[in-house]
Length: 349
Image (cartoon, rainbow, N blue to C red; front, top):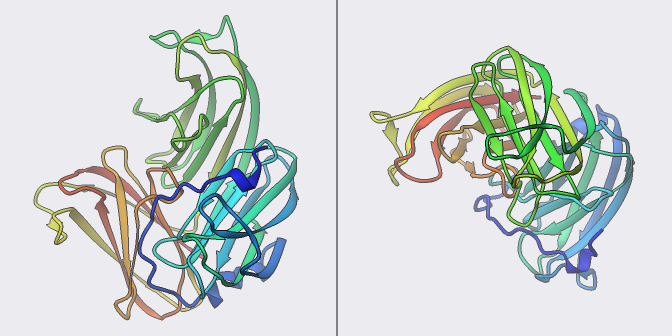
């Protein structure tokens, strides 16, 4: 495992924080299985990351296939949370959609001790925070161990591959992670119609792969485990998390003739009536363009996000609601002129 003192955050900005009352962010903790619940403060004298952000760490014991939700909130600084696996892999999140509230939802890949790092987006930020880790019962996860080896089937360019099958339902969310210490992983998800989503590296500094998808239809989906280069072999671990979200799924398309933002990106708009205390859990996925989500609250406050997880292409917001009324959800792209099909999953808790 890399020493935390030498670790540097992937500082990809998700959005400009505009603040949010975070009391509702942790309302569900009492209703779920609490794995870890801590209050603390980032302050002068704390340990620092490479770019001089103060940080605190907490640990918990996890088991392979266990599903968890980490939520970090503060009204005093712009939060940033990291989860380090026993083997050293790191998942990290800045803002849960233009708020000062960070979250990570994950299916754990192995038994062992996991580390939660609480820090800030900018250097030298201080203040109080709440961090909770709870069991997440909104789906099921499986962990598969395997090996790419001589004699396996090969792709056209000579990469060995293994295939796993899952049964999916229309509108279901799926998160797949592939890791190996032996080769540079490459991950593919083949839909029933033969179309394929793929990922090389979950972020630039990683050789592991990850995919998030909203399944377009029911049926058999094929998960292909392979390598970036031909003839690579070695052991791997595959985690398939099938997430059941209470809410709606919209299939749409950004295209010529749509309304546009001031910066010329095409936009589709959806509305939802919601109540204070609810949590909106929004995921926008497209293989045609870089997704971007904007949510406008009843009082006009705007929350927006590009990448859900640092280095990933789907856009998402997990947003504790502090107002009753109509929320506007705008589907758009990161760059102007981008078009194509998308799936929008609007979960409510």
